Length: 430
Image (cartoon, rainbow, N blue to C red):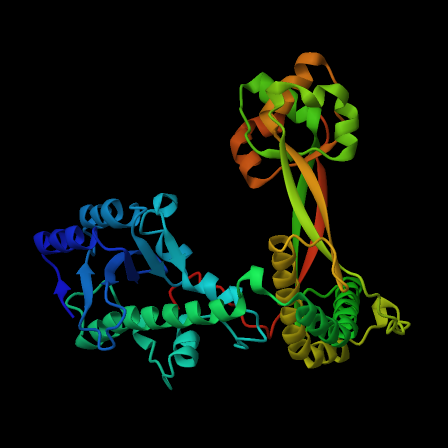
């Protein structure tokens, strides 16, 4: 476990690692709540190491030039695969959008259906203990003081083993994913179809009930003016919308260029008419395939007459939701997994129909807002549709948004979140 603090030693190691094909990388962050900054960069090039002796610890606390050198030589290099867990967090300190060829084991784990990997979350600790056969992994040092020097021996031991565990988890995830997604060309569509129909017959009643219970809970909480119950929380968000021509005229007047895709719905295409073929629009056509089951199962409706939202028993509904959720999650993940495999296999095997399924294609047309706005204003075509003012648009408009001379449409939506479902995101290094 070489622990490097000297700039020359760290630069020499970075030069050596710049020739590697794959590296397992981890970081420790100092003062992550108040003033987050890099403390350590852990790098492992030998995935067979189980002791941590091959892990290199680069002390870069308050040494921005060394961190930048690591980013430029390693993170930005597209020829080196960098494996990290919860990579979106680490790359905030390691190059952000400039980082290339990054593999995230958190994303890999999420690709594995719940019924195959039924875990409460996809945190690294959980994956280590489940996939690597380690009974208990002590992560208490993760929240330790990484801004203090010297680092303790316990911190160094913890840091070196995280890279080892990461490599082990990565190896096991690759094995499981290979089993989850066989080659589409060799898939047995008849067997997959039979399995799908079997699972779907169990899933459909639960899926229907889950949707009904959630809708009743949401309606009940709104009617009873509750944002918090024993099982759920309600949060609201506001969407701002303005008509296209108002936004187009504003951007032209203020000299603001907005670049974001606009979907050309059937109605917009009708309004554009022959102008849709204008070369300046550079219309992009995006094709997609949809899988449909040929077998329509008959079943009795499970829909019950629900009481008025004001009198709903939210506790009883919450209990019922928690009762059926585990089985539904397993079946739902298997249904989605089978559908994905079947769709890929039918496409690769050039089969639009099987006894169980059929594939249908559709396409959507997209065009850049700035191009559409320029064309519409130049020829005077009255395009009548609403544009959602995303955070990007609001930021680009800045103070000019106050000059919109028509009323902005505000749409409030409510989102219900189950309290007892563990959050799988790891936005902080826990």
